[in-house]
Image (cartoon, rainbow, N blue to C red):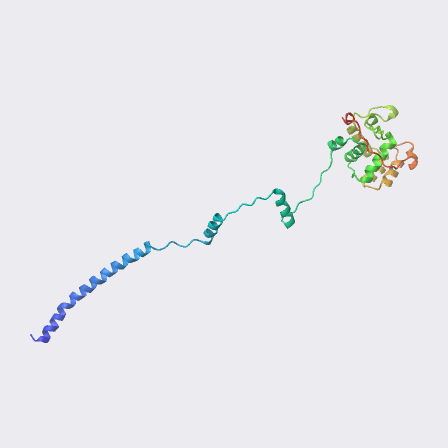
Length: 234
């Protein structure tokens, strides 16, 4: 065999061996790459925290407390316009007037029972009217400050006596609403009319047989405040 043919023959014999070595090398490389990939995944860093988690952690680490009195807090909120407070008021009742116990309280109690507005003029007229009928220093005489016979027990002069000043106020209010001749008084009080208009309606009514001489027997000076005995109120 010539040298050339011998070299060619050896080359053909060596070729499969080289291929096998190459395949073995590639296989080993693939396995190594797989292990490297798994190792890299196992050692990968955790995902970064979310923005919400960062804020919560910051708030927890930097929490602060501030003590503010209720009065200061309310003043601040009101000044800033964050709070709007509704206005309110209270209406006096029977016990309020009984507690006051004066002739002016009784005048307001009549207006309360009658459902009339408690204007300054109305209270002024009512206390003047009481003075005309029963005086001032003992305005609670017979528990009948207006000498009203409506609903009262029989008494001297036909004006009667009431069990207490509360019932007297209730009976006076009922009389103003129930008797036709008092319609003008009723309308004037209900309208919150000026004092002169209410007084003119009283004079024109049959409340007093002399009609207070159409005002000639009416006194306009301020009515002093006088408290009745607690027993008179019941």
